Image (cartoon, rainbow, N blue to C red; front, top):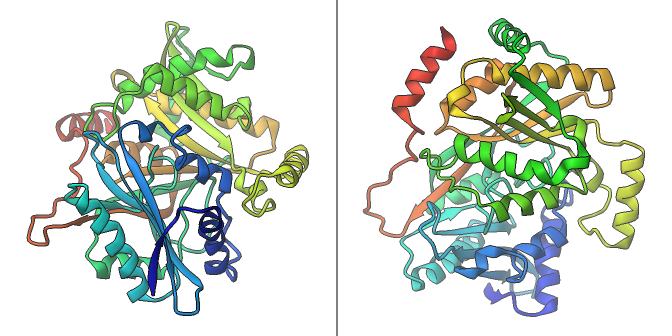
Length: 397
């Protein structure tokens, strides 16, 4: 077996083709769009290249067949994940898998790195992040990693350890909220200072700043590993959402006119992309438009859910979900939703989501490999333990 760096157009085609070999007998697999992956490795389209760099490799057997692939990168910043690997695919051969891991590790080591996280993304953590470790019998949602069960053995046997688990939840739209959330939601609904609304597309651009405000209060700088979002990042995210967003399933909560909560959902467009065969070329776009017009998508998935900490445990969560249920049930198209991953380092948010009637749907994990095999391994710490305990007590009182 030999390693070959991805440098030519033929190498790139082989990189994209390999998953079709790995998953050819898996009815649940939905290929990633090649255009989405190509953006990640394009320095002109991915801001991570401003300070970081990445490489991709193929593993080729004695018959000149591609049997594995991997990518690795350094972020060039003080990120919690300064170095990582991802887009790993391999036949069921541990020696082959280890050769791929060795290649990524050796390159990262040459760059002065001391650890390797994976499988992660060279970019946003809501895309291509984590390894499935529980429930291999459902299709992935859009931009979610997917893998056969034997990959878990590869990572564990190589020496990767779980840095944190990623819980994914499922909820039927018609399922009722717990009484405590319903009661709190009613109290806020009777207060004219509180309001929830769906997107108004006539002012779509203005929501980027409201999203940024809530995100930075709810997620940034709270031991979650998420850095503060800039205005340009928020605008870029909303520009990317516009072609696929359904305004009826995106919600913002306000207090006295100021944003205090948001729940960003998208149609689960993998229910369409399973028909485009991983390529959104002109034929793939025609298929996409056809299925979009037919309203093939019956599921939505929650991409980001956040509440200003000053309003957590007061009913805003329930108010948003009650408004969502009323809106979507009236429209009658969407039947259920998947809530994208929440790290086990954030038990407060997991408790809220469970209280809103969601049950665990799938478990993934972010692994870490320490190059110094004698170094002490530590799991990701809980987010704001002291405040977490206080909020949990208030939420249950």
